[in-house]
Image: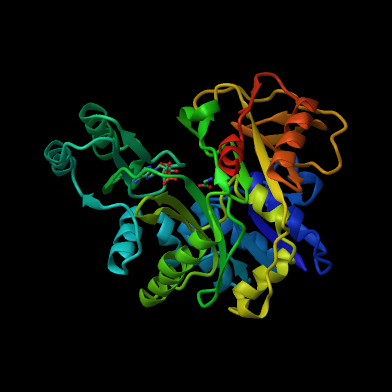
Amino acid sequence: MNILVVGGGGREHAIIKKIKENKKVTKIYALPGNGGIATDAECIEINTNEIEKIKDFAVENEIDFAVVAPDDPLVLGAVDLLEENGIPCFGPNKAAAEIEGSKVFSKNLMKKYNIPTADYNVFYNSDDAIAFIKDNNTYPIVIKADGLALGKGVIIAEDEKPAIEAIISIMSDKVFGNSGNQIVIEEFLTGPEVSVLSFTDGITIVPMVSSMDHKKAFDDDQGLNTGGMGTIAPNPYYTDEIANLCMKQIFVPTINAMNAEARSFKGCLYFGLILTTNGPKVIEYNCRFGDPETQVVLPLLKTDLLDIMIAVSMQKLDNVKIEFDDEAACCVILASGGYPVLYKKGYEITIDDIDKNIQLYHAGTKLLDGKLVTTGGRVIGVVAIGNTLFEAIKTVYLEIPKITFTDCYYRKDIGTKALNKRK
Ligand code: AMP
Ligand code: GLY
């Protein structure tokens, strides 16, 4: 089979390495891929938003199956376009991707179908939003741009002044463009956060092993929000009891709600959960695999990934028995100094003799005249699997010094919170 994977980050590298294990695969193309993916697939310089070009490439190269991994092409309708041209895909169509593409849509969906989430209001102009903030006078308060905003569209305001500034920058200054035409203002929830990725074909839903992201740039959750500085799996806060509750109150109701709205979801549905004292609540849905959650979840998957993806696209997921290893995984992201704000690119990366049990998932790397150089904020995810979480964390941190580039930084405490919970 000829496989096409749209995307070029660590998540896509993890997906490609798994797909490669399937004996039916003869060729994998990555659009655009990166310096590490280049050893596992043929990288083609087409950006993930250029959905017409993606479709043309897929048709010309007789692609048998496509995986659309990032949010933007999914929300733009890449799957619809590919399927209209006879190419089966893993990923939701445009109507279903709206669950991530519009926070107003997803909040209203949860309200309509009684799926637990933070209380909220929707605003269509800044005057009404500011009047609400003043009247409500409760902090912290959470302000969310409606549409995609490169992971930056959520602002937690500690006081009236930053809350009003956030509203003005999103709705009047349009820092996220049309994504800020509407906003959601919601109550601030507290509790441990859990990411649960799931496979679903719109009929059956199979949650994957749970994970924990570390979104802040520095140790002890200090600094700015990033795309994710590291992950561990499984998440010890997510007990079997909570998992059963989530299945009944959140996962199945979400699939049913999407069907009732004629937006049947096929692909990977990501539940961002917060475990409050009043039970688990949804803080966000993503219409795709999370990054860097995928880098710890897929290495623990025992069942063949491509077989699952094909079953999802054919709505035959109930025919596949999905199993995970009973081990633990830790991913630490090596980032460029200055990320998530300003950072330099083009530094050479050297990698010494890494332990064969370590996986390196490249994100911001490219090959330049045969040399590997940095080209993004998140550069490489270093992943270890262990019998215990402690072992996985220890192995990752022992190996990291073997990878060097100028201004490299990473968090030293990935998984610490999870280990403390276990004690
Ligand atoms: P998102 O971009 O939707 O993933 O949100 C980014 C982060 O903001 C989440 O991972 C949470 O840590 C935080 N967050 C979002 N909504 C809430 C909320 N209602 N209460 C507390 N924290 C939140
Ligand atoms: N790690 C969170 C996300 O992929 O959005």
